[in-house]
Image (cartoon, rainbow, N blue to C red; front, side, top):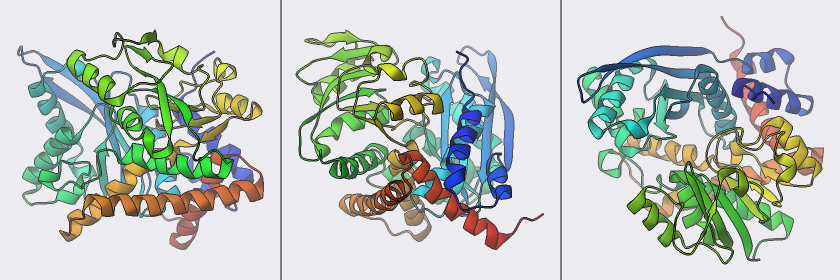
Length: 415
């Protein structure tokens, strides 16, 4: 089966929700395409003196609700359509979480694992310079994503400020606290996902029971999902990263897994565990399956083999529309990415507010604000789901698109 183009995947999800959305067709047509996309080339000087020319993008999808917001990823498979799709999902995600943002996204086609720290810094400064005229506190606020982190954000903001000749800490989020970042940002995506899962399990009558889980992807999001599993009583049996993973039917200790990965750079081979592949983990008999890596991992080819009760999408677009149709037929509940992983952008919004005001919040205050915001979003979306008898994703799109198109109506279509 040919892999579905991620932008086509977004359009299909929008169209599947369209019959339940009270919006004029022209607004839905506008939402199918990005407003503008910047494509650049970055000449990167390697440590050996050679120059490698890299392609990079920044997509602005829609800004009816506010400035564009979205991460920047470094990955060898990044391409224009992926960046456009991710910016489109960010538009929906920000509206789902009721944030004053539209959707943006950036990416560089590069294998960051092959770069030295010096090469990574030169790449990051080169990208920040290339998009300098495309971003700003009230224009577009980038953040971390796959293979970017607080250090990369520091290089971004330092480059931007030196070019502009002024301090502007709120132009990038996900920064270290020492340079204007927010407490509670590091685990925000995973923590928000656990808050949403908690409410989901409450509605399903499963909250309070010890449930089994598996996590595909052990970067920042997947790792923290394992660490925070106790928030909802999950016993994580298996985890994988890009090189494979580990299974222990009695449960995996976060401390042991994270220590082994720090020391060896891998999960596979952890003492007292059996090997696990990225394909096998999706088919495990667990209560909660958490795809936290890349898009399209559950699709028409393997969805019929998924045995979990709930799929919590902490990655962006890990379940294709065809795959989700199969899961729905099997009675498996998919908690959609636009709600499940919106904790990161929500706390990025908190960081943006703090950067603009100079008033910084304690970590427990950040957690409380995040919990309150996502619980409210969940309750509103779940009510739509139940009343309209539609899927969880369709309900999220109904809530988000209604909010976006209301703003678009007031603004009008101009020019």
